[in-house]
Image 1 (cartoon, rainbow, N blue to C red):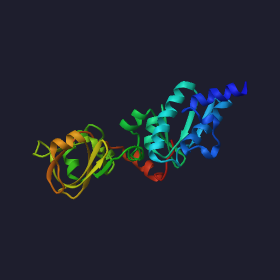
Image 2: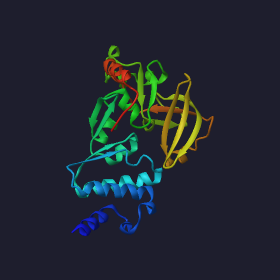
Image 3: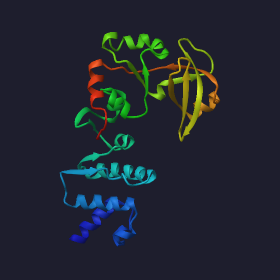
Image 4: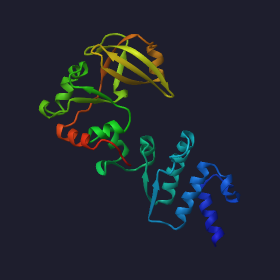
Length: 250
């Protein structure tokens, strides 16, 4: 009976063959799988995972996130997963709770958290974001767009823009802003472009490799940018977020 249960748990954790090994013969990732199997042995109603992949390298963490997602779908145990890794939270969770100094900033699905952040803290913490002063050239370009979000008296002094919402052109476009390319950084499937606007503000844009290849961008090249989407927050919300902006949990 015991052996049958052990074999059932070993079948869950994959890959096969771990049952005949000593602990010292297991890799870090394999040890985490075995630890998870031990926790599931008591058939818990809630499984608490407190930064389980924190000590592992990036490749192993990626593999274990996919494995944990499949395991969760198979055993249907409610899991509370604590992590400081935004990518980890977005990939594993059905619902994310972002906490900041013991206070809940937002609760929602990964898509809701990313696309509709409730506070400046949430927007800055999940994914890369440009934080631009309201006095910048970009604010002038976005005047109509911003006016539909909040009244001028109820806005923060900052505008939040995701890098993928900035489009780069080699020729001037209506409402575009001139910029100079400072750096070009390959990030695997994306290319990060650091741009200095004529008002000296720095913004980051993310392009696909095909977009970058088509534009044939070079450092010190003069280009033009358009912002397709931006976010601003009520002054009251921004002040609350700033008072507690020093940590988070998922």
